[in-house]
Image (cartoon, rainbow, N blue to C red):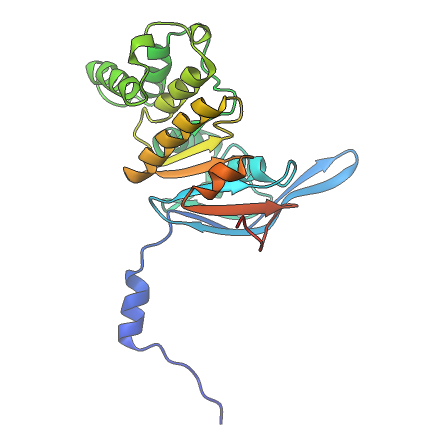
Length: 246
């Protein structure tokens, strides 16, 4: 006799009530076509991340960490597969839609800060609000100062980035990433160019952001910091490793 499993109404109601992950990658592959041949930086990657998680992404050089972040943020498109973030099918957006979506949804902190050198720290933090036309002009000014206070560098608001230390510039980059109150903060080696004490301060700030409800994704080569995140995703040759950090 062949038996079939039936979902009872209560089971169906429980399944329907489960919140959808904030970030979902489904069978994502990214292949680059080079003179030397095709190279797959990501291979059938499946990832689910819930709202409010602090996730560290680790792996050796060339493992696919940066490609993963680029696909998540819409900087690069998957060769195949789907990327859903906060219900948006990112893989289906055109360039104009991506720019609007990215500005409203993500805060990105780059490894080398990428602050505009001719703008003051205050102007750098205000810039995303100007670009996305968020808040009134007075609210933008107030918010920029509040964010600089949050990261502890309000006294440097009217200085140029070149006048700040590496840690202060990274703090400014985090403040800028928070300008439009994004759901998700993505950081690529946020402590890679900092001394141990400053790296610890930046990491503590990321912990506070996650505790406040932000979803934080941190690419890092620092295994000790990664272990202190809420969860670790390990990449190896473009695939999710089944042997995460212990």
